[in-house]
Amino acid sequence: MPTRPSVEIAYHSLYSETAPVLARWEDSQYSYNVVPSRNQSSFALVLWSKELDTLAQTTMMEAARLDAEEAPQREIQKQKREKMTSVFLWRRPDREQVEFPAL
Image (cartoon, rainbow, N blue to C red):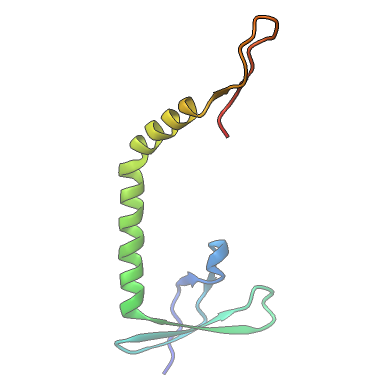
């Protein structure tokens, strides 16, 4: 028997959108969810593995933690690369020194 939870799930996740769950069937391994389509004129059935969803959520949290932890070092490396990749084209007394910034 389906339940009608008052939750939203990721739908069109490429755009970080969510959709309200209209009906849900679950067992210990899977979740089956009926959600309205984007234009509300039809429905979609969204299925997922609970085991893989848990793994994905854990992995995303670890990735976010590592990004935050490594951000200061990445910024230092970026500044070093920018400094090192500046190129002087020529240095002649009759011409102005031209420097191209890093790409």
